Length: 228
Image 1 (cartoon, rainbow, N blue to C red):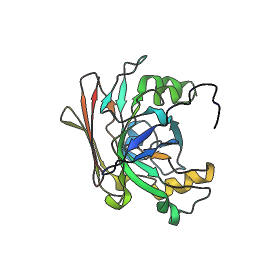
Image 2: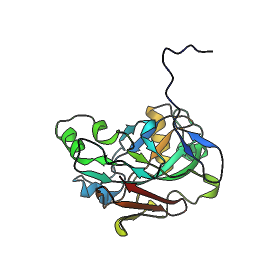
Image 3: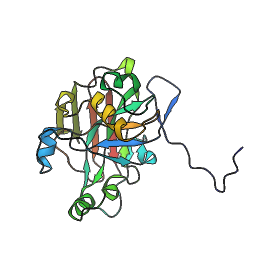
């Protein structure tokens, strides 16, 4: 038995649809600018380039249905995403084998302190202060791959207080799920428990306390989050 000097941190997990089991979370990889229209709205060239990733922390995941508005920001944006959960991994995974490593999919939000992210970009600093803060990754239950549909096609939509803010289709992703898995495995040893947040369509924007965000991904489900 390991004699820890302090109490070990709690293992972060997410519920699995239709099961009393939970999915343990190891790492969270987030791909940036993976929809052309969102790339344009953020002021960048939508031409296909090598993908880039940033990370959130496992304990940024929140499955409570509430999003506490974070401190030190007055401009917090929603970014609706398809989340990919891995059951296995490795290095240098070939694209044709990549989907064999997928456990399932979920609806998630990459909440962003846009003002702080903007300062980081301007100063050439990492994005974590704008991306990897407490409760910044609200997420719904993981739907096993056998019970979901094609992750490379299907409507993705976010409404805030009933008004449509983001709307697109997974087939608009510049880098598909299999490509993301294969590319990541060239640079990291990906593994069971890893999550990939696959990017967001155009229409990102601010939320305030009291707003209700309802995100849907066709074939996966719906996520309702209240800003508190």
